[in-house]
Image 1 (cartoon, helix red, strand yellow):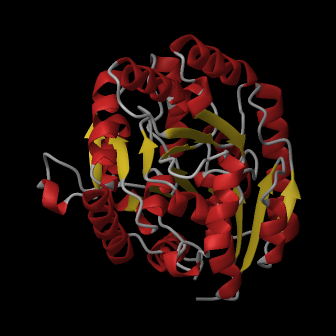
Image 2: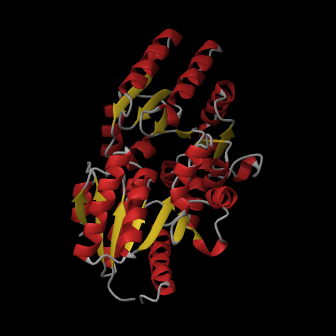
Image 3: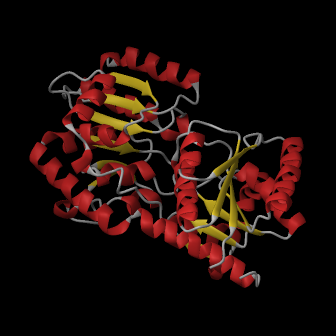
Length: 388
């Protein structure tokens, strides 16, 4: 494959699954001798991009108003012409509209990644979402997402590539996490000796369902169960929602068991220190945090959704003796409370579940598979256009 230049387009390079995937693909491109550029409004991960040899171009790509979309399309088209870009790869809907326009103006190959199960609320919303399926190839992050793309947009099979998200084995390796790192993260969480930690990792936003976790803890207290330390780890996207969570915890009498530490840099240690990870939102593509936690031998509680059923081995699809976690209905605090009690009750069974989880992740969701499959998509798209 000849040397190519790929521009990945994303609103911001802050922490998150889409951003991490962007970084991982950029690193793989550079390692393979290609040129990797990321266009975004910036964020904490820009320095990591530069550290792996990728380039960053700052543009106001988080904006969603029509004027900004048009101006961004012009900026991206200019970037394509100046830098002789071979492929534009969009990872979010608003900037994807700008990327689509730039690709059409310049005749550049266009790839998208469909990261999440976007809600459908009428024709306007459906049209807005549809940009993610208007590319030469749309990458679906799970089999569930591929099924959704087929149903919503009637996308031909040869234009869908299923590339599940992955975890970085060099970073999420339990043998590398020292006792000092675990102690540091427990101190960050304010954990006392003997505290069991239930971790919900993700931006503090209603979409991630931290409010349902708070309600489940309230029910556990009401029924006399020992409470884990509930850690809601992630950037605060909605300050008013954080305040709402803390106020509700006060009302339920569980505020002393809730921690909101913000962004956590050492997630490998956070998963190792935790007894269970929760990923209970209604809309996910394939939750990367669930992959990472399981890779670190931390069992999971996931939503009873397509991605939830795909990301973990859970009853009733699998016998309890083969499970890597438990599954609960979306927005069902009583069932979530019961699952927490269940998974934390027997430490030996929890450890065995975690060991199965780590083995399953290392057999299925490797970073090498993700990056090599993505580079193969680029090659296929260019070959179809007769450009390689």
